[in-house]
Amino acid sequence: MAKKAFAAIVLAILAIFAVPSAASAAGYVPVINITIVGNATAGGTVNIIFNIGSFTPGETVSFGVNGAGTATLGSVQAANVSSTKVASTEGGTNVQVTLPKNASGSYNVTATGLTSGVVGTATITTIAADSVSNTGLASTGYEAPVLLIWSAAGALLLGISLVVVLTIVRRQRATA
Image (cartoon, rainbow, N blue to C red; front, side, top):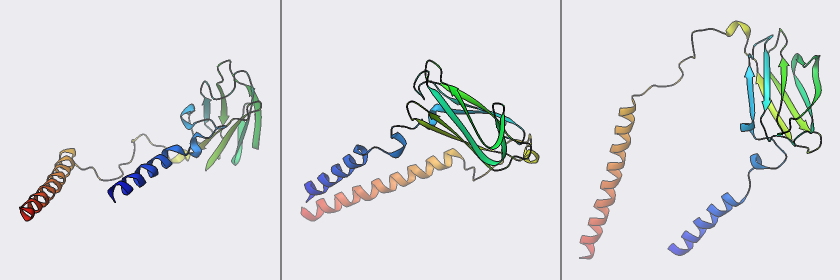
């Protein structure tokens, strides 16, 4: 019985790791290759960088931006903007997006390699201009002392160990 259960567990683990996930599917730029730098407030400018290796070296990359209001991509301003650029010799590129003065919500930037068909997407979530403050981040959640957390985890492990040892001793006495 134990051999069958062990075999079932091994097969389940192999099935989990043998099937590729959607994030590793070919044709998409990994999220770790996309960097968003800049001021994501109304009227701000954001630079989206697709790191080296994101596209085929030297290929033409088509960019598109859509969202609430009109964004400026390069020098074109419209509700849905598109533009093209040539990737570097290492396959990287970037695009500068200027958000409208009344920007709100999210803006989706899509970069598509016209030769390779590789697609990279980035989302710019705007911050209302009046909500920006210099007081730092808001405190969210409970701030428990680390020593207390480790002490509780240790006590839990000690209790589990005690139950296991007592069970083993009881079984040995029962068979003796």
